[in-house]
Length: 514
Image: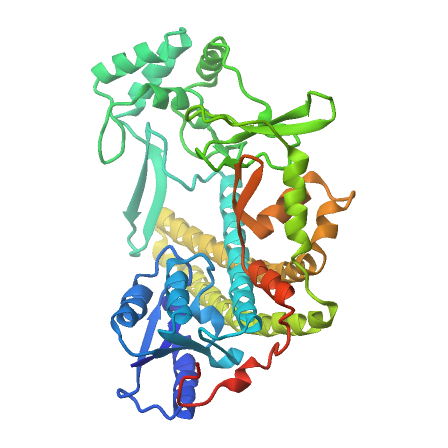
């Protein structure tokens, strides 16, 4: 049995499924497949990322595992397959085509993959996944930007701290109102605890007292507040009207539990304990996020050290001594340079790669246009509702507050829609920038890393762009090479750039070619 798979990201995009279905059925007809005999058509709405792909696993992966005969799995385009190169589903299907259990076909991308596919085809697949991922990542980044805007507006987007409670209530119009309010049960206990701490009473004593008073957490387990939790509570400015987000503080719009003078006294009590804070994170070390390959703990750097010139790194050995030695950072730097030398795209292949990027960009443009059209339609519908409310305003003469609340809800949603449209617009631009950076890295990685004009932050970004899971064992760096750089290295080693963009000419309709 072969499979035609159509997928959209969510229910709002289901209107795009018929177009995918038609393309897939046209392709099946080209392969001379008969419906229900040679293939099975599957469609679902589910994200292309690893967090939630239950339908993909149940409808595609599991049946393929049980099937004994070799199967062809057809997706219209690469981005309908996955946008996440690290997903379990991609790993499962990759293992299947590597062992000859399946072939994967992408008709609109003129690409098919099997165990005999050349490096050029595998590179095209990885490029397609990477570029699709860039676009979606850019959208997520801009969603985060909207969260940042909510923070600026004084709205807390997460779970309320103990002493407050998250709530959601259904309004007369059927919509849900979400927010945060003071927890009348726990807030008095929090106020009492702050007063005790302002006198200099230790966390341990406060923990005992509040446990005796019956204060428990607002989680499902309802456990007493621990000493460590009290330490965080007394440093949380939310109780005095400010919320801390990404290292910065913002005024919030909720009622306060304690007065500013009490907050200041508690902070003075905290400072009197002489808590020392490390400044290590601010030091200019290239590999400061490195972990030990042996025990998994952090590798700390120091320097210039010993002879006043070099920087050295060594495992902290917090998990136990295992003979870690100081390693010269220059040795790690040279290992990275050696790797970057192997990431090279011939200049003759750059035009073809640019064309591939443009093809992927055209695919993302369809998604961008579809989402923008849907959002604009919702915005216009809300506009009509708003006009209707003001036209019938007299009906709300005795319900002025309800009228204002309904208007405000519509205006808030319209603001969110404009933000989402901007997110997709920014993501569209970021897609092109990210793809351009990928090509730039592949063509001159060593120059970018060695350039005297490159700042430390730029070098770190380059490392994170190419590598992941970096660990240190003795003087040797271990890492995972991100896609598609591994394929670039393999093709550079074998000089196997021939057949780029032409490999699908080997596809013989109606049968597998191994």
